[in-house]
Structures are given as structure tokens and as C-alpha cells.
Length: 367
Image 1: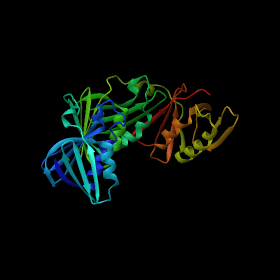
Image 2: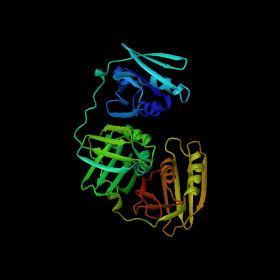
Image 3: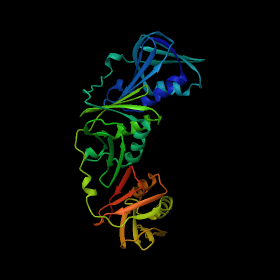
Image 4: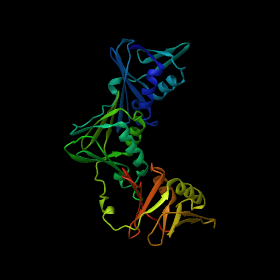
């Protein structure tokens, strides 16, 4: 196996792959990247057995095709620290890979490719094409609401619900919920729901760096595969049913409250400085055209701030986790934020005034 490749050509693909590979592995070969060179391209594969990323780089300077695995992070660091525009010579000698660039020489240990674990994917039943920018926007607006290591394992991921020409992304940690809805662009002719695991969602979001590109998404009950330019991303799915959140819409609501997004965000950030470090609670006192934000902590520190709002409903006092509210408000694109509290004060909807693609729901807390 022998080839010459530009450092600038191999580095982006290598970076895409290495982030999937866990630093601590039970199997040594999982710390390696699989390199497969044929006559015209170099295909690199990284996996942690739950997620797999395959990236293809076109390379015309392949003298001897072949396949081998090399330590992923060491290989990445060597390529990363070479000067821009450098040529990298790669040559396999028995169980060692010799790397040369300019006056630099490296020798890496290898492991045989036949021991590299195969990513067993099921037959894909569903398929649709989607603009990468649209999908990334949906991920950006929802993934921060995913749970992390929750015992309700179905919350440690993101619901993807395809209903004919509509796509819905939903994430919740039990205290808050984010929903993003948009058109796919054509009729798929089917309805299906899957839960993509937390790490896979984060990796996929990181990969989608070109908003103009087209995604080819395929999935079954157990796996999802996303093809994006010269990258193929595959992941196992969470085998569970996402809780039915539709009931939260089927209730009476109080009068909506309109407020400048940036004003609310800044005030919340200031008041939250003196909130309880563990619970981060801030009380919202709503009445007339004034919203009063107040908080206190076990050290008897207190903060309050009054904001002018557009509100014509009943007076109300309700408390929220300030970080949850900040996350929701920060993800709005409009200048105005609309806050709508449920009639029984069980939840607060945060959305944009006109035709919102996304909604955020935050549950109140007792202070």
C-alpha cells in the first residue's frame, strides 16, 4: 500500500471521522481508522460500534492499493501539525506505516484490517431527500433539549417524525421540550417515527457544514444512514417509543405575552447571577404592562428587574429555571418573543410571533 496525498485534502475528512472514535476503547482496533486505497480514491472509516462515519477522498497518486488500520488520533495529529499545502507520502512496510513529508519522518504501528469490526446495518425501509441547511437548522433548534444519561433512555436522543411531506424533530429532557416542523419538499407517502441517540445527533449536526448540500436519508426500525457529499454517516437507533407530547397543546391558555427577545435575554442573564446555583430559579411576576423578574439564594442575596411588556391578561406569578428560559429565548430568530402560559400554569410556550417553525415548552418550578 503506497500513495501520496495533500495534507489539506486528507485533513478535513480525518477530522470528521476521529471525533466519533472514543479515546478509551475496550478493543484496541476501535482506536484506529480504517484506510482503504483503490486506484483513484482513499476511503477512511471510523466507528465506536454504535456510530460509523465513512469519508471518501479522491486521490490520483495511489501507486499500490491496499487496506490497513492506523492509530486515528496520532495520524490526525501528524497531518494537523504539518504545514499547509504539504505533501504526505504514505507507505506500508509489513506491520508499520512510514509517513514522510518534507524533512519529517514518522513510523506508526498498524493492526490488520480484517479485524476491524463490521457495522451491521439492517435493510432500510424508508428514504427521503432533504436540504442540509434545513435539517441542520432543525437540529440546532432542538438538540439542546435532549436528556443526558437519563434513566428514561428514550429521552437521551431526538425524535425524527416523518409524516408524508412534513418533518418534525422533537427533543425533551422531561423539564422542557423543543419542537421543529418543516416541509421536506415532496410527498414521501409514509409516516414513521425514530429516535436518534444523543451522540449521533451531535455528530450529525457537526458534519452538516454546507447548507446548500442535499442529504440522502435512509432509515429502518434499527438504523439510520445519511449520505452527505462524500461522507456516509450511519448510526444505531434507540429502540423505544417517544412519549406522546400532543396533550400539552390540547388545553386552555392564558393571554400571550409579547416582549423584546434581547431585553428579556439580558435581564434574565443579570438576575440569574444571584439565583440558587443548583436550581437556577427565577420568578416571573406578570401584571399590567410590567414583567418583574426576581430571584434569591441561600446566602440571602436578591435581584430583581422590571421590564415593559405587551400583555392584557390576568396577573400571575410563576417560576422557571433561568437557564431553560435563556436556552429557549436565545434560539428564537425574531426580535420579539411570545410567551404563552397554560391555563393551569403547567407549562410556558416560547415562540416567534409569525408562522413559527419551532416551539419551546418550559415547565415551571416551585421556589
